[in-house]
Image 1 (cartoon, rainbow, N blue to C red):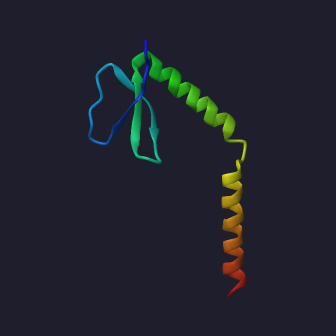
Image 2 (cartoon, helix red, strand yellow):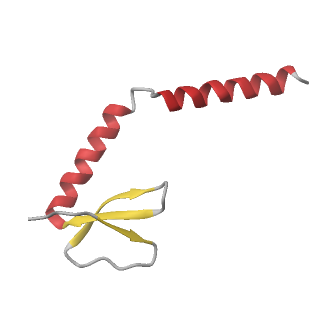
Length: 78
């Protein structure tokens, strides 16, 4: 049995046997899976994000360094 999630854009209708697993804020779509599987996908994604929240990756560190440098330049330049 093949269980594929489907992406549903705003205004589209999902099949009745599919349930919302999560919402992608980056691309503005909803990911749906068949009804019992959508809960497993949602819970596993929530657990993964919860574990990852405590770790900073290289992208967030670079963002913070750039933000601090920009603020420092803004306030020291005046």
